[in-house]
Image (tube, rainbow, N blue to C red; front, side, top):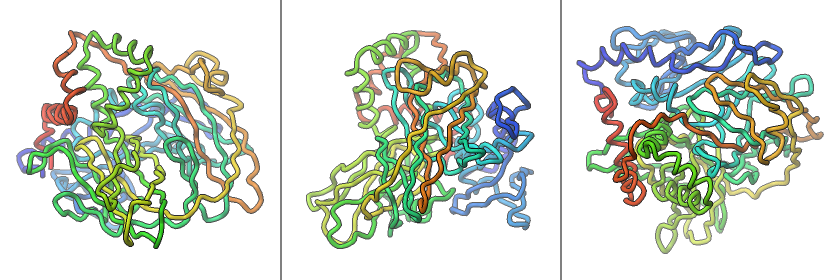
Amino acid sequence: MLHSLQRPIALVLLPISLFFSTGCTYVHQTPATEAEPPTRDYLAGVTTLAGRDIDFDKAGAIRGDTVYAQAQKQPVAIPVDSVQRWWLRRTDPGKTVLAVLGVAAGVVLVAAVIAAATKESCPFIYSWDGKRYTFEAEPYGGAITPGLERDDYEVLPSLRSDGGAYRLLVTNEVNETQMTNLFELWAVDHAPGLRVVPDEWGRLHTLSQQLPPSSAVDQTGRDLLSWLSGDDRRIWEPLPLSDSAGGLRDEVVLTFPRPSGAKRAKLVARVGTALWGSHMIRAMMELRGTAVDDWYAQVDGNPAAADSVRTWAVREELYGLLLQVEETSGWRVRGILPGSGPFLAAERVIPLDLSGVQGDSVRIRIRPPRGFWALGYFAMDYSADQPVAVDTIAPRSASGNAPGDILAAVTAADTHYHAMPNTGDRATLEFPAPVTRPGRERTIVLHSRGWYRLHLTPSGPPDTAMVRRVLEVPGAAVEYSASQYQQWPMATRLGR
């Protein structure tokens, strides 16, 4: 918890963090990409350490050691040291751009640095709902060089047809060059009442009988059910500090009811890379110093080198979380949960083989390294996938402030890319909107592909010993992360 002598410093610095991003540019009612007044961020709500989520009617104000606001037309006063997560609402003067961003309280003092300069993700994707653009996706995070280029699949729940067209706003809001190979929409028509969610590989799954966990506990026996059973703003995100036993990993066991004889299931999860974990991509790249370009060349020119990076990330569970199922023979890895975000975690389906499970329940175990994961919610669906009809839609027009033919660059996965090299670069894409099939409902999935390059300024030789240790010693990357966190001003004193 915050100690009383440290509160004044935290309260002075917190308001600064509310303006950490250059944001989107103003977008007219007829979507355009001209530069206009910048967006504004304000405190829109909090989630407390007790798991209470409070959405403010208007911007909250911090006075002394208390947040004062109005919620559901009633005044509220919230002690600063009871806050687990700050919710920031970003909008523009015309109120045609909206993003809601969550920042863990334990990194709020460094959020300004992380989010404006070192938050590592690809473009921010905003969907046009007929009235405004809403922030909905952060695709292909972690693809920091061409050799790691990858596809991404995300549902866009706010996207609506407007005048027979779907429109997206794509922005570069961080300190990197973003290279997009493909943007296409999948218009998925399905039976009413079903939900459609992709897995990591773009396979579409229907959901109709989602069951929340019956229990969720960590290694200490702490009950996490209220944090992990609902798709809401209660997000469990331990800070990158060791626990009372000196451990830097948590262990979470989720228990789900299992219908008699069920051999297969679909685990549904909204889990993201933590903001600190995203920052650590840059921190670990900076260890390579002036040799970083040699590393890029090796990964880009040798598929085996690229595969070794992916294998390391999963082994350490930094950006891929192993899912273990308890079977009669013990715990067995039966899936991998990919990271996403950090500001907007994607919902994912992970098919699971339950043929080795006995009894009327299924137990899932995960061991997230501290500081790298923000856990939203989990559910299990035992229904069979239902038929869906999919129309693949290429963009028909595109405009932006970065040079090049955007439309030609993003309509096919090939050797042509649309580059956004500067913070503030942006583009709008328009797609034709086919009529929804009679008697069907529609879900829109964005399929994108690309990579990005961090803007590093190496000034010294590589830290060869630390690079080798991080790569070769299990757990060393998490230890390095914790040591870096403790070096940030005030970070350890804000840890809880």
